[in-house]
Length: 123
Image 1 (cartoon, rainbow, N blue to C red):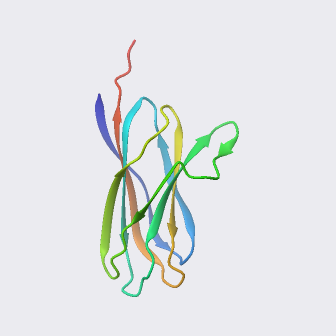
Image 2 (cartoon, rainbow, N blue to C red):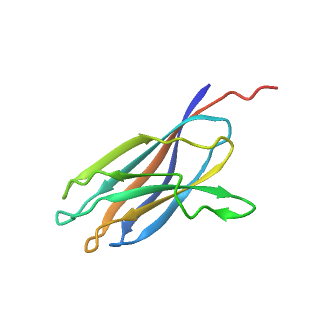
């Protein structure tokens, strides 16, 4: 088994109430998946951001209901980072999006990464 850390993507500013695509996770031979998201919240922010993970089917598109989602706990005026373990579908592609639940303030400096534990390929 090998462990890899990959940056999925960054969003410099996410408007109030907006959802934005961050990137794709290639889950070949995946054993375990952790997703980390770091967000900077404005001092007047009232609602947390949500990370949403969707299964991407190359032949039929992306699911409309997330496989997993989690909130990045709100601390107004602070940088918050959260990592969660996500159940995954082996050998799939996972699309990651971030949603800003606040209706008035943008979230800034959003960074998303993943930690993958993969099975070794056998011959």
